[in-house]
Structure formats: C-alpha cells, structure tokens
Length: 477
Image (cartoon, rainbow, N blue to C red; front, top):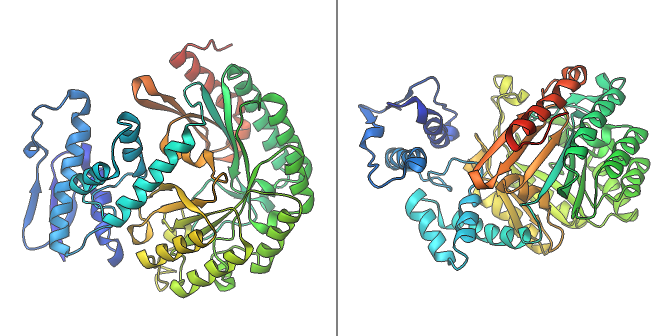
C-alpha cells in the first residue's frame, strides 16, 4: 500500500513522520526522506495554510498549527488503515505533562474535563486517558513536597557497563576496555562536580541520581571516592532522594553495596529486564536469573528498603508467556517498585544497526501484556506514578513506573515533567535549566565520548560557566 502525503512545511515534517511511522510500525514500514510517501491511489495534500489561525496568539501559533496538522493526518490514516492508536495523535514523550499543566493552572479541574480534552483534541483511547490522568494526579501530590522553584537536582552519569545490550543506545562503554581509564574518569567528574557545587551552593538540592551505564561497574574505592565527594561538596539538608542504579547484577558485590550504605544512598535499582535466561543470553546480558535473585536477596539482607527493578516488554522472541513468567518471578522477590519499559528501537542500538541479522525475530507488545504488568504491580500494592513514551516504541505503548506509597522515584517525575533544573555531570550528560517565568528550558551538553570528556573536561566546565554567566547572571570566574 502506498499513500503519498505531501507536507508543505519543513517545520512540521518531523512530527508528521513520527505519527505516520506509528501507524505503519507493525508492518515494519517507515517513512523516510523529506516527503512522506505512503501511496494509496491518489495524493493527499495537507497544507498548513488550511488550518485556521484566527484568534490564536502569535506565541502559541506554531504549537496550535502542529497540533491541528497531526490531528488531520491521524484522522486520514486511521480511516485508511482502519486502525486507531492507543495514544491517538499524541507523539510527544510526555503525555502526562498536559494533564499536570491543566491541574496546576486550574486546581478544581475534574478528571472528566481532562478526559474530554485528551479525547476530543488528540483522540486518545479511554484506557490511556485514565492511566495518564491517574498518574498526573499522583505526580501533582508528590511534587508538592519538592521546592522546584528554588531547588535543583543532580545527575551523575557513569557510562560503563559489563557488556552492551543488544537494544541499548545509551552512552555506554564496556568496562573491560576502560578499566584502566575509569579512575581518570572519576577524577574528571570530581572537577566538574566542584564547579557545580560552588555555583549552586545557595540553592536547595532536592534529589541526586547516579545513573549510566552501570555505576556499580566502578571499583569499590572509586565508588567511595565519588560518593564521598558528593556528600562532602553538596548540602544534603533538603535532599529527599539519593539514588544509585546498581543495574546489572553481575556488577554488584557486597563491598560495593556497603559503600552505597556508607554514604546514605536511599534508593537503588537492580535491573534484570527479563527473568527468562534464553532472552538474557540473546540480548547480551551475560548474567543469570539466579544472579538477579542472589543480588536482590543480598541487598535486602544488608538493609536496603527501597529497591526498584526494571523490565522491558517487547524484547526479541518474548511473547506474553515469557512476560508472565517474569512477572511471576518478580512477585516472589517483592521489590518496592518496578518500572515497565516498552522496547524502543533507537538508531544507535545494535538491534537496529544490524537489523538484517535479526529480522527473523519478532518484537511483540500489546495492551494485554501491559495490563498483565499493571496487575502484577497492583498485586504488590503498587500504583503507577510516572509515565513517558519514546519514538519507535513497541506496540505504540508507554513506559510506566509503579511503586508502593512512599517508594516512588522523585527524580523520575522531575526529569519527565521538566519542572526542575537538573544539573548533569559526565560524558553524554545534558543539563536542563528550567526557566518557568519564560516558559522555556535551556540545555547544556557534554560530549558523549568518554576519552574526549576526560581530555576536554576544562571545556565542559567552561560550557557551564558561559551558560550560567550569559543566562542567569552568575559571574563566571
């Protein structure tokens, strides 16, 4: 089937392609190039000039035209393909941000009024409307304890892993090849950290998140040096959460967990992604299901009371049978929160780069699978508390975090809803400076390459200096 869709504005091409790809992802077709070629007998011409701008403030015109254009495309493709999408014409990664914004602007708004907006504006399904609204309500309550006007959060990236998973597109390097350089990397982090600590000493530090990669690939003495510096350089009197992603069980030792305890880490993640050994082997996670169980039991025995576990739905060759097995196993472990990711194939992932090699393997996700995960979370007394979406996500679904009350990952909400400035350190880390009075976010990026980050650490610090000096008037000395 081919339908030719001509978008007469480069400005709106990207969003249009994302929406079209969502309709055709199940068949493996993708829209490429500067024109979307989906032919079906005749050409559909969508002109941005046909969208009425009457009464629209100039500041919101682009957003309004983009929204109406996507809705036009959605209506046509839905009719042509006899298909609807769970999230309708919404293509952004933060679908709950709309509901949260409405709740903050209109405190008395009802769930039905929010539902009507999602339904009539973006054609979102009733199931996803209910999920998004529930999460937005919970996020609003949780954010009330965060002073994100005068506060900030700190992200520290450790870009090393035992191995690189087949689906992974994050900035990540095999620790085996970088073991001799990891100490130098920590020293570079400390330099960047010292500058940030001094410049933000008058603001409240709300959360700290050490992610990656896999932070626990560092040696115990390196972790001790890093976390000790965080505690020494920053004021923790307002900090409500200190998370370290232990991540891969093959990187966890009792000695490393003892270091996390020493510095008051309040939340860790042990992430199997699946509890099916055949899948673990296939995707390049060279650890066993038994190691997951052993390291989880070790962390519990040592006193960690807030443990998250990540799972991915849509891994190659996994059907609902394998997902059910993973959920049965996680119930036995009984963590404090679980995060359910829908596989999203990024350009940099080996599974995408070498897709011809893996074309015989199916990637399956569905409402039935996601509902199974939710039912498992509910059976463990967990509620959904944050949500985000990505491009090329399996089944056009979403990623959802579930947690028991009081065990939610506050940093996860802050990074997704973009309510608070997050200062990011490390290779590939992106600082997001939130300017609420101007309704915008400014970004400062570090280079992704680990060697370049270490060699150019003075430049990375200088980027932050120039940004702060030029944007908010902090003198760069």
